Length: 227
Image (cartoon, rainbow, N blue to C red):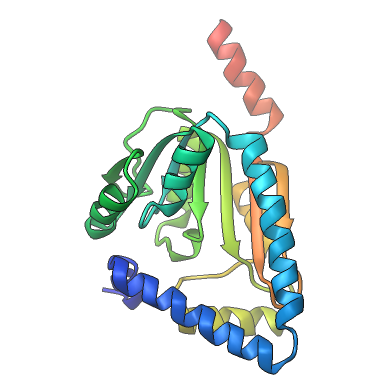
């Protein structure tokens, strides 16, 4: 079993890992005298992200793939009146989510073999999950099948070498994922229309993107419903 899969199946260990990484980052930022700048940039990103969530998600039916502890789904359910489903490959994470974030429906499920009908959800969400997925092509294909829109959050690598290599080395060492792409790579991977995006700069390697099916595909869907 890969170490990152073990960690991401244990709610307590996973939370401690995140706390440790955030603590080390803050120490480094303070040592470099950029902590204030980083915090201001993150606050601006958070504000823009919350505005995007309110604009697009209120009252919608959503599926989170790799929902983990269910924290994000719990927020969407309570604060934005979303009809929420969460799936994860870890039974331990699903059990934790059911206890700590009740309201959404949860199930253990393989992201590359989703047990939902076509276009069953307004939004499919990947919250810092894609870099851990083994069958990335299959997972994206399934997300595009069951979702009308897709939201991704990712720790984005730098776009150019050698910073791209160094950022991947850092995350693979401390986070254990498969591959960390830049936001432009993810947009090419999904090959969908982009309706909203936020990208961090410098050491804030934040990427958010909301996709929808391309206009031609959407027109075909409408035609099939009215035929």
